Amino acid sequence: MQVRPLQVSDYGRISPVMNEWWGGQSVRQLLPRLFFEHFALTSFVIAEGDEIKAFLVGFVSPSIPGVAYIHFVGVAPASRTLGYGRRLYAHFFEAVAAKGCAEVRCITSPMNLGSIGFHERMGFRIVSNDGKLNGIPMTLNYAGEGQHRTQFSKQLDKRSTVT
Ligand SMILES: CC(C)(COP(=O)(O)OP(=O)(O)OC[C@H]1O[C@@H](n2cnc3c(N)ncnc32)[C@H](O)[C@@H]1OP(=O)(O)O)[C@@H](O)C(=O)NCCC(=O)NCCS
Image 1: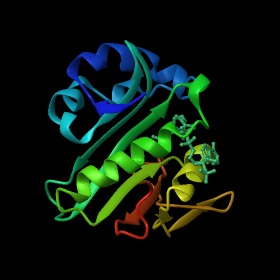
Image 2: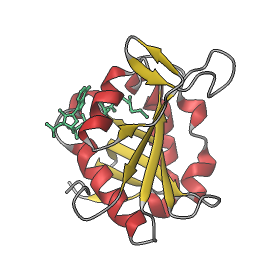
Image 3: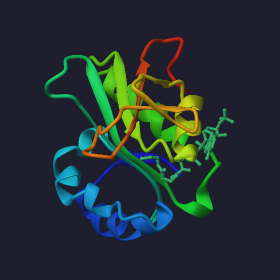
C-alpha cells in the first residue's frame, strides 16, 4: 500500500471512524472538512481501495517560518504497529523539508501514552516544561482551563529524518 495525498472525498471515510480510532473520545469535531480542502498537499493517507488504513493531517505554518505542524495522525486499530504511522511521518518530513521547513511540531494529551511513546520513537522531544502528569511534562491550560497538553518538537535534518 502506497502513501498518497489526502483528498476531500476522504473526509466522509475518515471523520466517521475517528472517535472509534481514538478509543471512544469525541475528537472528530477537531478535524473539520476544511482541513481536507486546504491542507491536502501536506496531508497523506494509506488506503487499500476505499478503505483508509491510516492518515496524517499537517501543514506548513503560515506564521512561523520554517516550521511545520502535524495536527492529527491516526491508524486503524487493526493496522497498528505495522509501521504505517512511521511511514506517514517520514513522508510528511520529506514533503515539508522540500518546502523549506527545518522543524516539525505537534501536541498531544499527556494522558495519551501511546501517542507519547510513538512520538518519542519518531525522534520528537517534549518541549513542555511547566507541569507534569504521572511524570509526563505538559503545558498547563494549553487548550483552555484544565486542558493541559504535551508539546513536541523535532528538528529536521539528514541524520534525524525517519526513513
Ligand atoms: C499512535 C499511532 C498513530 C501509532 O501508529 P502505528 O502505525 O501503530 O505506529 P508504527 O507501527 O509506525 O510505530 C512506529 C514506532 O512507534 C512505536 N509505537 C507505536 N505505537 C506505540 C505505543 N502505543 N506506545 C509506544 N510506542 C509505540 C513502535 O513501537 C515503533 O517503534 P520502532 O519502530 O522503534 O519499533 C496509533 O497507535 C494511533 O492511531 N493511535 C490512536 C490515535 C492517536 O492517539 N494519535 C496520535 C495523537 S493525534
